[in-house]
Length: 211
Image (cartoon, rainbow, N blue to C red; front, side):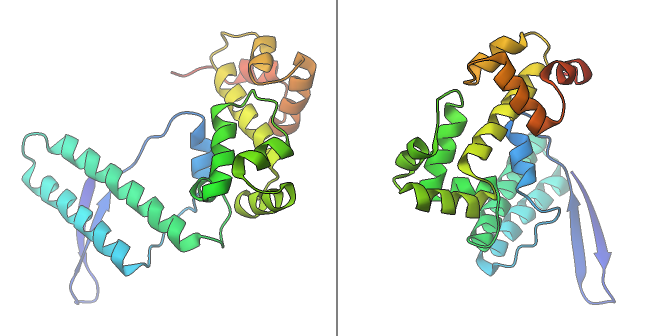
């Protein structure tokens, strides 16, 4: 993490801290897809919390004592989590995305059920039951929060999981298909091509595992 100090037209000073987070795993696509390029946080109480964390990071950067790197990493993680919390609170009911679905008590239960058991034979009725809502209300609210229907979301999640497994090149396409709830390799391949834009085999060949 780097820092820089600057002045603005002679009035006070500004401290700029720069760092980055490295994400991995299937949910990275959903997380980053739910976030805007820049988070602008306007809530004063939340900003005070962030200011405190930033102050602690600045102290660690200045002192550079034993364990400072580890402390800064944990503070940066806290900064990220708090920023996402404030973003969710500020955008509730106005912004669509995976994070807002997870933040909703009822829709969040259904979303978690999809994430935890993607191979289940989910349909609208079963997901609505998990959420404790009628099918019509559930479908309407799910679309409002995520921008897609529950079944489209399920299919997209399955394809993200499939992409992760195909990158390793160690599993047959048929095995991945059955593991994700498809009754045939053909049905899986059709869904994969519709969502990703190419066949599973081609994807596995063109996207080698870089780990």
